[in-house]
Amino acid sequence: MPDKLRVEELLETADKAAGALTGKGLAFDVYVRASSSTRVEVREQKLDAFEEAATWGVGVRVLRPDGRMGFAYSTGSADAAVEAAKKAAENAASSEPDEFNTIPDPPEGPYPDFAEYDETITAITERDKIERAMAIEKAALDFDPRVTKVRKSSASFSEGRWALVSSTGVRVASRGTYFSCGIMAVAEESGESQMGYDFDYRRRAGEIDFALVGRRAAEAAVQLLGAKKAASGMFPVMLDNIVASEFLGVLAGSFSAESLQKGKSMFADRLGKVVCSPLITILDDALLPGGAGSRAFDDEGMPSRTTPLMVEGRLEGFLHNAYTAKKAGCTSTGNGSRGGFRSLPGVGSTNLYIKNGDVSPKDLIASVKSGLLVKEVLGMHTANPISGDFSVGVSGLWIDGGKVSHPVREAAISGNVLTMFSEVDAVGDDLRMVGGIGAPSILLRPVSVSGS
Image (tube, rainbow, N blue to C red):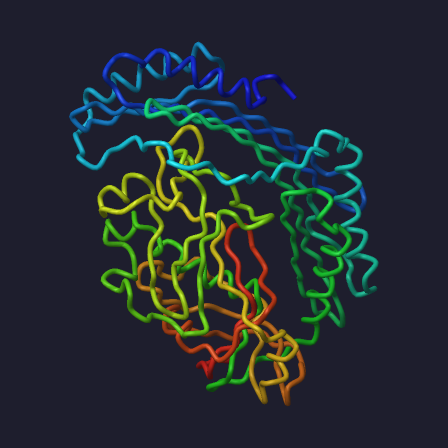
């Protein structure tokens, strides 16, 4: 690994940029981030793509006493970081003042003792990475003779390191590792073709069962063979955990105080009110072990925490960075989030999820006399993140007499996400994170299902 990726090197770069601004009557923070990644893709047990990438850069924001904020970034070297600091100060002089602009003070207490870094990443060779991607594909093809091909089998191995130094006394650094894989398998029978997808994402390489991912994708494809058109009418609908996560994703932006203050949250004027079923509790947990967004501090140096957003259906709060917190007259929830060193901190969730219930997916299915288990949604990107309205195509499995009867296709459901989460009959115990958003399986009261 190049020296400039070491945490110590990042702190030294941040200190050097900070030195160019110290003593000038300015508040500032310097954010340095470095990352490296490898992505492997195989096809027919042969290497199809091997991509390596590395980034390094520094972002500097400067706040004048009159509330004017300036920002600049650079890549390349510590000297370039100094130039970015000077440019940020120049940009501040010509910006519009904002009384809520702020560079936050460091926390009064210690940061959480938390790090998700896998030291073994340096020992994973190129051959190891290729073999792990091949293991996914092989497991899928070996699962069932009806699995005829794999469209994509890939694995990614990456790490990031970041440091933050501010005029208010923040001086922190950390690092993290990230491992993921995914596969799309194709099953064919009697002229019919179905696809199944699966994935996994972990902070430690040893926690991924690559072969299991392949088998799950193959099973998903085979399970859909022989699909029939869905019946139309009002039926109980069970969302599997991945689909439930997708619906939660529609709500995600509305938990941001930034969206709220811009009039783009569906939760405007609803704080403290019941907005969903009492079976629904939603948390943003930056300290979730193994979570994609887990970290000790946010991108402004604020300590990470677990933030209850909805407790038993009641809206309890919003996610804040330093700016939105100052504007709202509260404290940051540790959700300052940068898209990278090239951007100012916005507000972002970390690990946003619906808390587990106490019913197994098997028991959820057993409780349904006649209904639909949704395994895939088409068109979720068309859902309105401000109103919550949606109309999507779905496919999955029909439940009859508490047992899976047959696969179904060409169905559609529509409505409003908040209304949907208000009509919850039971919540499963199978929470699964899809990146930074997760949910268990959820059983809904009768929903209008449109067959075609």
